[in-house]
Length: 152
Image (cartoon, rainbow, N blue to C red):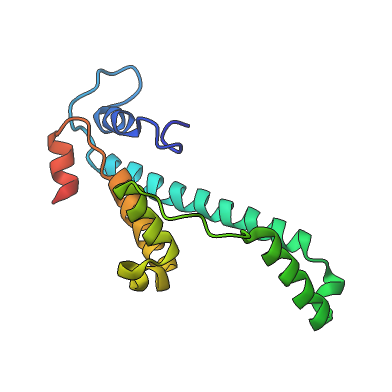
């Protein structure tokens, strides 16, 4: 369960790599191929959780949209307008005075210096998520010969 939750999965991987057999003492780097299993398991598990999260969002969205409103274009557009009104704020918050907060504010609202990022915001966030998954998969507590094998 810890491996699927990305909770201290690296020491568990090392235990799996060092495992020899039942009732036998572990030997260091006995099965380096087991590291590939753990890395693959973590990667596939992270994608599975992401897909599960997206499917729940889609399911909730489909439940809110009734099948009768999908057949009538005007009813569908009215419902979308109501959803947009519900989720959009009435006023734009003021520009913060703190430099770090103003920087974040300009990124998310499309300030003068960040118009390109704001137009491609979805792609930018997706790239950040993919980079984050890469960093999470590369966590190493102690550098060992097994991690040297997986890096090469």
